[in-house]
Image 1 (cartoon, rainbow, N blue to C red):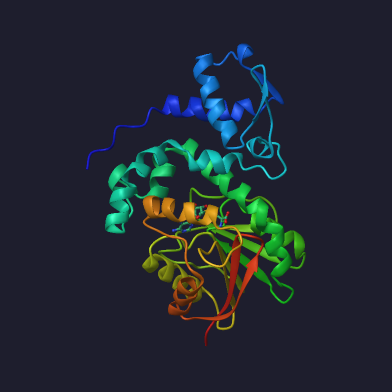
Image 2 (cartoon, rainbow, N blue to C red; image 1 turned 45 degrees about the vertical axis):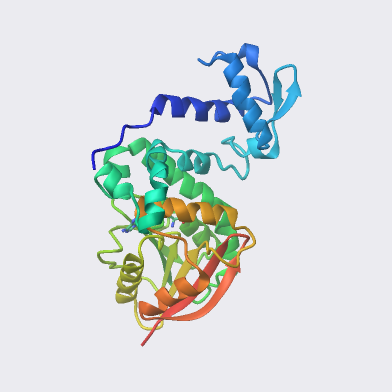
Length: 313
Ligand SMILES: C[S@@+](CC[C@H](N)C(=O)[O-])C[C@H]1O[C@@H](n2cnc3c(N)ncnc32)[C@H](O)[C@@H]1O
């Protein structure tokens, strides 16, 4: 299929910037806005946002922050700014209209829409979007890294490898909590970066993993088709020794207190990488299919689970 008509990036950016930039001030007076917008129409947009709890109408064309709008600020302690930007990046506006087709066929639409796989496209054609993506993943990991470090006993481990570890925030947190450990950050060559007590290992875990470690973590990466998931896990197991630990950390579509994020991401993953979020039984079965022995499945915070497994043998 030909590339779709690209969404009007300027318009999309303007809408997002209004929502985000408006959050930069504690109160906003429409008449003072120097953004290139029509005040009456901007007021209509703000009405919509206030209905959803993003800003509060304070009367006289003034708007106050709400807990939701504060999350759009970069300096908010639990900021979701980059997650919001990522979920509304220009490429998403090209794939969501094909949801009906994806639901009918059970197949993603990204490769057909853009002519290449999602991560290849991000790194080759949309470097700004790749930057937003990396920051979004780091922002999301910042919400859970300490909780993961608290439940993951690494006292007996020597070296931990984070496979597809992005910018390395989780790995850095685990190293902070475990001063005896060192780490390996494995990601695509154009992927993450981490300075400090850690070795970088560029690679594609669907092709091979050659990392010396005794604990392997895979957080929010086994979200593509099942064959890729099993292949990546087998590659990890092939790089490990019998008895080494493989820890999968994921949002499951069943059994978590907070499901709204996971179920929305489940459909976006269908569209962009022909992937999915898993059920507990489904993901456990894939881990076992890869030859790993599952020892426990435990919740971590309101929306993540950890599957602790060992390389058999
Ligand atoms: C959804 S993010 C997860 C990042 C990190 N684990 C986290 O939870 O924040 C996916 C990461 O996987 C990396 N990645 C995607 N495909 C990969 C592959 N085949 N091999 C290695 N890394 C990959 C991307 O570069 C990106 O950093």
